Image (cartoon, rainbow, N blue to C red; front, side, top):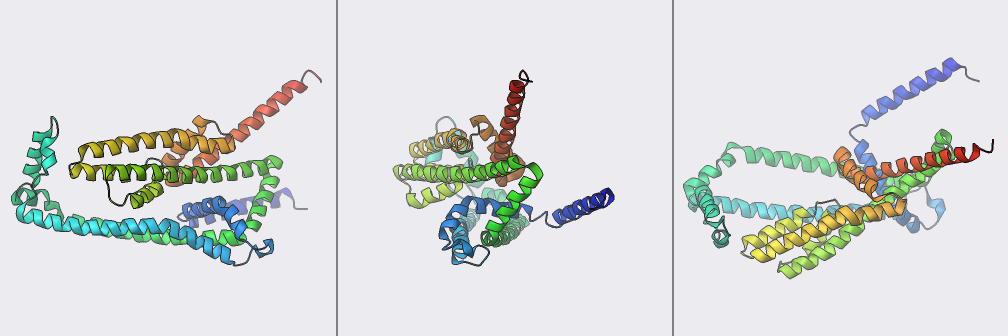
Length: 356
């Protein structure tokens, strides 16, 4: 039997090594958390792809295929968006060259705006209407700022790409050894917190899965409804725009980037009513989906009250960024489980009091 001194020394050494390991891996911890979230959300799918349970811990085509499929689902729309961005950047470069040579005349619809039409047209003419004004307005391009921003963007893009590859690598490892890792986590929870620890762990897992399901359902619904709105507004390629909106809609309020840009394009082409109508339709849909439907889907799956689900989503995102979209509701679900257990213990103590 180890004495108290040996136990304390072992505990201090373990805490020191744990802190050292966390310090070494601190830049990778968000990536590891993302891989765990993806693994928890897609684990039932992976289970169905296994031919036999004995394949756990081995490299399987199911693990390889599912990892590659998740990578393609995320990278394909981002790659398409990046290619479109490069095309628009080339068009913008040509537009800026023409502006420096001959200026850019104001669009016809600008002068027809109520109340501010003449003022907006005058501002446009002063800023871009002549070659001299355009050169002065675009002078910052010759200072090297654009080159600096381009290099920073390329550096960040490369960094994010390698980070995503790390997530996929860890995800594949979790698929391969997830069964054993799950048993170890449950055993550790039982040793530290008893049977309630297992329940809290399972509740946290259910909260993560419910958050992902709610995120996907909201994205699909908003992509479909806004795709119909794009078609009615007369935009070209409404199906592609709807798919991109669905991807962005998985993040609260991020769909505004897509339908807001589409609305601006309609207004720039002179379709004022269609642009304003599309933007109002998208805003109403976003407010209802992100403030009411998404919290109801997530909270209903884990018996979490609506207000705590909503606060968990927004508070988590403000604290942890996009990862907080999953961590916030999960933390609220576990805290609510602890609160319910405490209330149950209090009630049992009150009921047992008079019988003593």
